[in-house]
Structure formats: C-alpha cells, structure tokens
Image 1 (tube, helix red, strand yellow):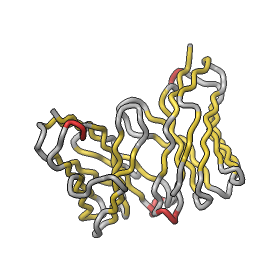
Image 2 (cartoon, one colour):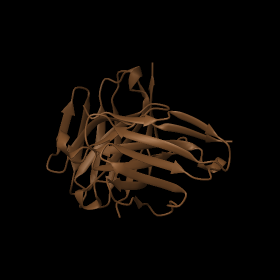
Image 3 (cartoon, each protein chain N blue to C red):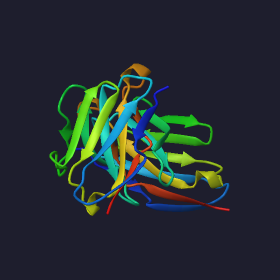
Image 4 (cartoon, rainbow over the protein chains, first blue to last red):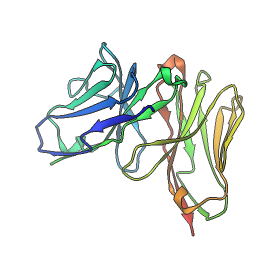
Length: 118
Length: 113
C-alpha cells in the first residue's frame, strides 16, 4: 500500500512554455502533499506544502506565480511550471502523507519527473 | 528553523566493512528521524527511521542510533555489499512544522569490491 505515482516521468519543453506535473496517491487519501526539487548531486529542496482544498504554502525563495500548485482532491496534486526557462531544469519529486497508514510522519514519494527546458 | 547537517559527504569502504554516517539537528522539537537511500535518477527510499522516544533501532544490517541530548543521530550499515552503493540522506521532522522533512546534504557511499 501507500503508492504514489507521478506523470510524466520525463518531459522536454521549450523555453517560455508551461509544463504540468501530476502526483497521485493510488491507494490512500493524502491529506498533505509536498513538492521537492532536486538538482544534480544535491539534496531535496522543499518547494511547497499543499493540503487538500487549500492554498499551498511555499518555501522562501520559491515563486508561487511561477510554480502553481493545485491540490484539488485527496488523491491528486499538480505542479505547473509556468514560462519555464533552462534554469528550471531539474528533478521534481512529490510526496504524500498518509496518516491513516499508521505513521503520521512518513512520506511516500513519487518516482520523480525529470524536466529539461531547452 | 530546523537545520540538519550530515557528514561525511563521501564515504568509501571496503566490501564487508561497516559504514557510519552522522547527522546533527538543531531543533529540539524534532522527533522523527528517517534515513533514505537514493539511487541515481530514482526516488528516495526509506530504509529505516526512528522516533525520539527510542534510542536505537535495528533492521538486519542497518541500524540507527539517536542521542536526543546531543541532537545527533547516526546510520550504521554492517557487512556492506556492492548494492549498498548509493546516496544516503538523513532528515528530521516534527509535528510542529507540519511534518515537513528537513534534509541533510547527503552522503555518497561507495563500496569497493
């Protein structure tokens, strides 16, 4: 149980276009989802925390107008990178909390999305 | 806010030897400490975790120790195998911070055959 999927796994887009990444909890209801970005040879950097039905909370330095997060249901959160530029190229990973699974602290991670902006 | 420091950044050990990775944290409110293994291009994989009411936890070749007073915790891998080669991350979390994970910088573990 506690499976999180992410789509697409890889995407290449042109500079100036927008890209949407979906994160789904397949077999549980995720009250909280997290979005991370990871650059090569670096740690995961938390971008934002989203709770179902409410606005996402963005970390300092993350532009909320550029990285649009929607958590419209208990099983789906989306991250839209608007007007993407080459410096947005990164590995984007989502995770979800599933308090009903037993450990309220544990996060279940999606497989990640490799975004390349040309 | 919480800050997690992780050392060393790279660790090379002979196959069969033990590996130890150490982390320190700053926020005494943190009470959950997971360790993740990440292979290149893959998601982080939880390998072991510990809550603040426990000092040590073991799962086969992997163990984690926690010293709340000193605010540090360590990952111990015994009898290392080539498949243990990966990047390992420690993290800290608390209910007060909405269960956000604060990550260490990572340790690249290399197992030499």
